[in-house]
Length: 101
Image 1: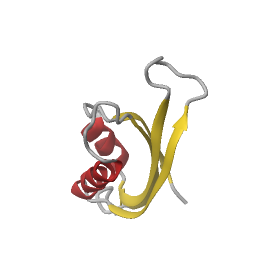
Image 2: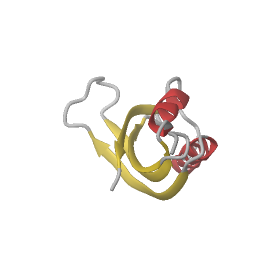
Image 3: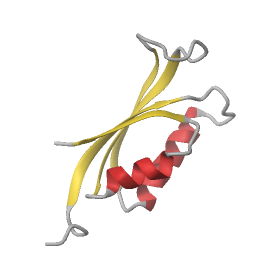
């Protein structure tokens, strides 16, 4: 079996910075879901965990962010591809992708 045929389940946790964005949080979440679908991933669940304050703020002007989790399955290269697609996206402050169940 080659690596292109392997599929794994993942959980991506994101902190979104919506300060300069005019889009609604649901619109941003749908756009992120479309990015996952574009890299051949199947999104099974999206959890909007709400806005939470940071215990240690790096930026005094950015004290809280919107936490979102995506549960998806995709190819082995999905975490790397997802990070690359979001590298220049200003609305994504932090991204953590973990191998799921």
